[in-house]
Length: 277
Image 1 (cartoon, rainbow, N blue to C red):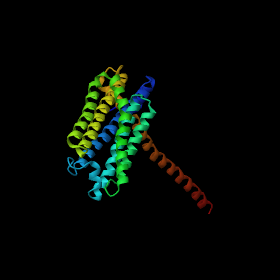
Image 2 (image 1 turned 30 degrees about the vertical axis):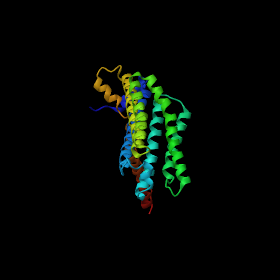
Image 3 (image 1 turned 60 degrees about the vertical axis):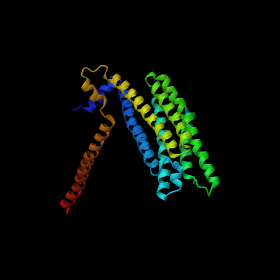
Image 4 (image 1 turned 90 degrees about the vertical axis):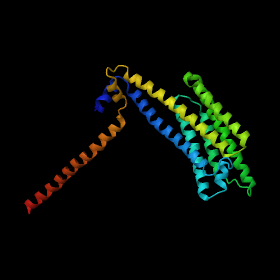
């Protein structure tokens, strides 16, 4: 179905729906980015955590006691996982109008702590550095928990549909981690469980919150539409991209016109000169 983007934009401006459409477009784009980063971080965690036996080695052990490529992978993994947690939670804060700068700062500190922890060597020959590595790893867990749990509890209170899901996954994440720690001690399996389950929790919450946001904006746009299919085409039309394409098409046309005019200007003096001569 072909739609006239200019007519849609004009219609939305008349109905005062242009801001709603912008919010809908933003939510759709952010959903793709957030879910993409979280899923990539989850895959990266599983791949890295199974490079060696996770029942025998910790994640830091894999990154410090094997090859250089293991160490590089460990640093990349830490930086990306911290980035995924921070960006996803920050995006959800904006989506839910949850204005808590302190919690955002704690999430940023969690990200930085994980990066520093992966950069610090953790080997028996360097006991001081190993201690600092452990401290920064613990700080990552603490900052992430304190920075994210209040928001998750807030979402559970405000969205009854998500309440049981959030509480169940939090219990599974922390409770399962404690069980693995009791059974195996501080191993890669314990660490993988905690991080992977938390990433899955963030995937579920992000998916549901963005879906609710998109549905809310679509309902507002479609409320006066007689044909639901036409309304959906209008709601999902990319007005910004269309404007950019129009500009891209106009630029070469203007350049050609200017080029022709300049050529005419150049030719005219030459003709006059030849007549005089």
